[in-house]
Length: 341
Image 1 (cartoon, rainbow, N blue to C red):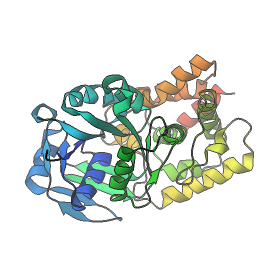
Image 2 (tube, rainbow, N blue to C red):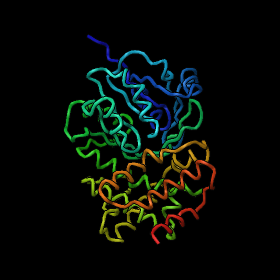
Image 3 (cartoon, rainbow, N blue to C red):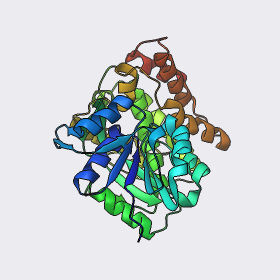
Image 4 (cartoon, helix red, strand yellow):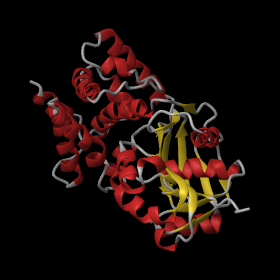
């Protein structure tokens, strides 16, 4: 009988590190892959440390850089930033067993990129919304619990998706098995657009979402993405206080207000006060996922004749901050508002 190889967790940062460490702690064999040599060395020498208000522990772990991966794996969890998906799946694909699968534990519509490389039949969808950050080599902050969802891309209930769901429940006991994974992914795109808007300011997610001054433009941003989802025939799903029905054409104002209040309440509970996008801009000073996450909204919107001027302007503002052409400021949200004036 063939020995079952470990789960290959490609990307040992916020998402991959948090989930992979929890699986190791639960007795599941995991091999981490990460391109940061110092992070790989720290994991091998000292184990992977998870810190924060949810739990504190260090688990012995194995990690390698992409060029050192050998063999084939039945299960690959792709956990890299969205804009690194194409390069990561190109490197990971040769190590995917013929009957294996790749699960995308990422933000965005990365399943499309993965399926184009390894085939839709070998791609599983996964939605994550917990709060985590890479702090330093070998150390990950697990700042707040959030929704975790798994589903086949075609909505079928299969043994492998049930097994993936069972694995994810070892990390998040409330993990959901869905027949509408695209609904969750598009719901996160709407929510993610709001997070990108908060990230162009120095303020926390909750503070920006709570500010009455900016709720009208944030509402229009959410409605813009919701209109693209509707044109695509998607039924977005709710999670962690986010109500997608509050951001669809014709949504009542009271529903939108309630969703904003619920999102604020959820984010106030997390030790992760700012998004990973904000951290890329303000702390790590590196390119964000903006093109990979928000770019498809503009592209798909254009295919359906749905205008997305606020999303397009937000992408441009993020690029301006990345390039040092402007600094983070609440006033940048006024520029988004000017688009619709």
